[in-house]
Length: 113
Image (cartoon, rainbow, N blue to C red; front, side, top):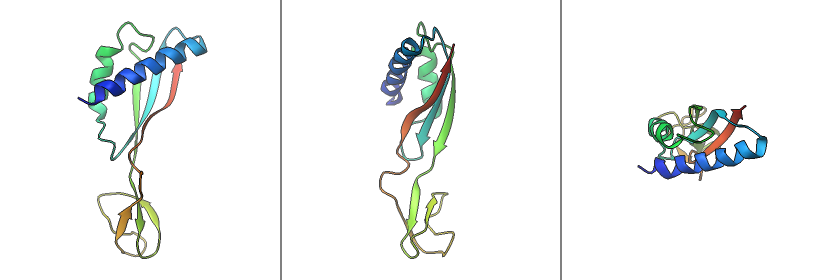
């Protein structure tokens, strides 16, 4: 349910960008979703399909890119993307979450005509 306000922000931003770039239609929007952001791409798509009606981004294709949380090994300092394990692939040591990583959600790019 928390995806609805996020989708409304995307639509407002795309309305502004369409006006600023002289687009009458936004055709594609690429969004980045962090692994720990709690944003669900299917929910974003569902809300977007309904809420974008009668806006320049109506029928725009949403593309999703996913950003992993980053970990840092306590032993060797190696930073690596979280892949279901907190063990360093370099030395096998325990790792901790890099503060703030994997929480992103943003518009990476868009296209229009």
